[in-house]
Image 1 (cartoon, helix red, strand yellow):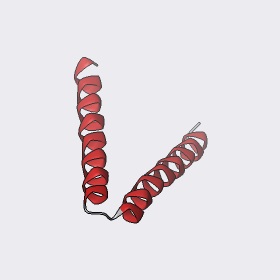
Image 2: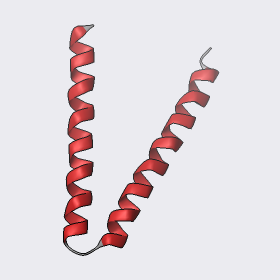
Image 3: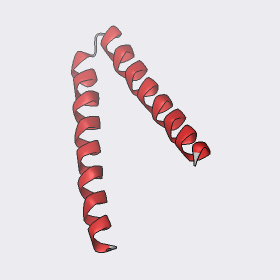
Length: 61
């Protein structure tokens, strides 16, 4: 169980750091519109993934 939690934590950390790096990089290149789109799109995709996961989880009951 510890291995699964550790793997999930490391995966989440690397995903978050890549998201942060790419957003800051876009902002530094004066592409603030794309940086904002990156943040908004990521949040939107995350919410959609949660909703789909909940729907699929409900089907498996």
